[in-house]
Length: 161
Image (cartoon, rainbow, N blue to C red; front, top):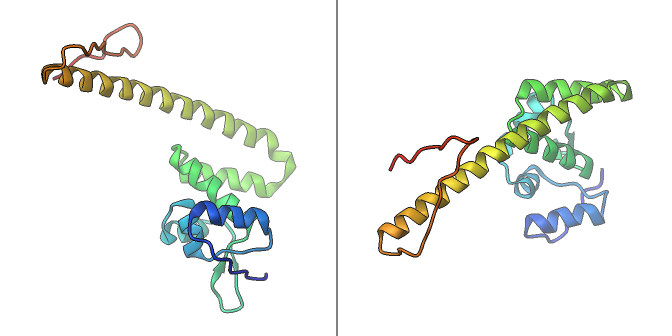
């Protein structure tokens, strides 16, 4: 692999550099910056067998665009709550080839449902936070603020002041 060194200073610049020059490879520190993770996290995914990373002639990790995309996927799935064991299962299925597409699809469908449930819970938390802000703003003398507390279904979440 050829290592290109473009002058890039922001993660978006690095992503653009990878899209413009598919032969460009990034160091572990550049990948960490692009993805907003630590180098330790990148190395962990490699040690866990979830990612294969090429090495330069001097032994340093070099990440091509495909490896950065895979790592980005892994990070996003972990962020969304997918466990390492499930990620390992998914990666095993990918490595097994096209015959495993139905199983991979099911994993992604299940994960999507999990993410949607998380989004719903976060929306409720945001609404509750907005309610408290409005309540405290009213207590501080801003009586023009009206607020209603959210409910999970039809029952009230409650208002533990």
